Amino acid sequence: MGTFHHGKGDLHGITVVVRTTTGRTWVGRCDTLDAAGAHLLDADLHESASGTEGADDWLRRAARLGVWPRHPHVLVPAAEVLDVRRLGDLR
Image 1 (cartoon, rainbow, N blue to C red):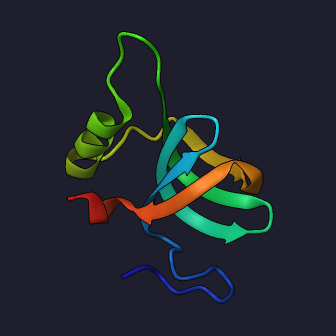
Image 2: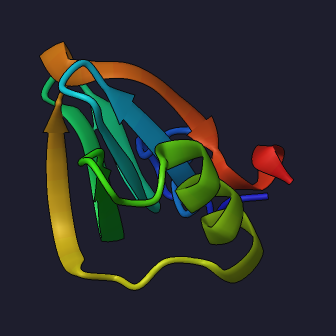
């Protein structure tokens, strides 16, 4: 269950996965989802590149251990968001 702040939405305070049209995968604590996009706090990013861990493996590890908060605040533009889901649902 997330924290409740007026106007923040059901996912506020929940660690979520945001997949994008650019092939990026973000994991972070959801602040808000609005017309501008997904506002994440304490987030980390996976970008596919040859010779690196695949996004699915990275997400499985993130679901078990969490992520390193490399980005204190990030806005994933709405036009790039494919889906938003709870990280805990991956377990």
